[in-house]
Image (cartoon, rainbow, N blue to C red; front, side, top):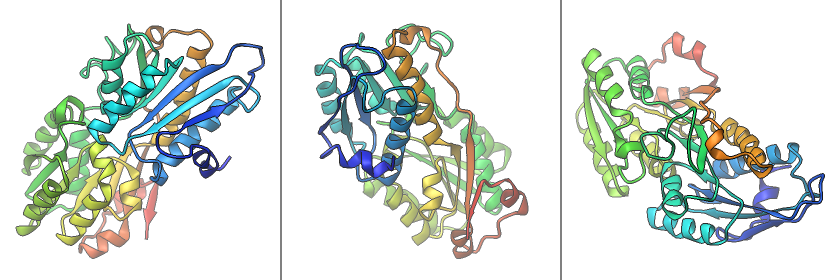
Length: 331
């Protein structure tokens, strides 16, 4: 089924999506809440939701099973996330699929009993969602997208594609980033020291902050940018890409959509694969498993995307080693 076939049924950002079915046995209707960290208008978010629904379908939750869904799209704003978290919990679903660290934190504040399966969360232990990865121990489990040492990996990519840089800003929003931005910083800072690149911590909270940080990097030569993972940065990716291009700042990103939409280079997890895999935990919990007994899963598929068009505009020559390693090259 095409992703837009799913979205068209939602009828708006806050509309419930009823799916009346009977899954191979005459069970009472089950109810799932879904809280997305992106708006319904985002093609990437639409695709993720579609992949999740297709995976559920393959597990037996079809148009003949007893399943009702309530889907909310937040656009990443903290207030909107909290509002919809309260709203979904009040509906008393059998389970909630939670997209991102900020969303999972908001849901955790609202319920300690409703099972929650998270996706695209970096640090569930440090964020207090689970006791440990093998034994979550509560009502929450799910699928990690990125680990802390990748902060250094992104800076390594940046120095390979732009070897003359002397300072690099790591940009993030403390309100939505894992450990308020501290999760990726130690490896990012260590990589900067080893490569003689000054690491700059650059917290941002709005569009003006983004413009200020990136413009300041472009005022002097040899500045670079690493966009850190969080709900805010993914929902402001158009501005980040635009400002990097306008100020001739080479930038590395954590998610492939950036590179496909004009960013220089991205390295990270295949997020669609995580949404696909999450359906297995939703299925198991609906059939009686407990989140406390389901270990948190690590990512299994990574992808590198290089945008040659952007590299040429920046006057950069992409090393052959990066081109060979890339899963996708945009020309």
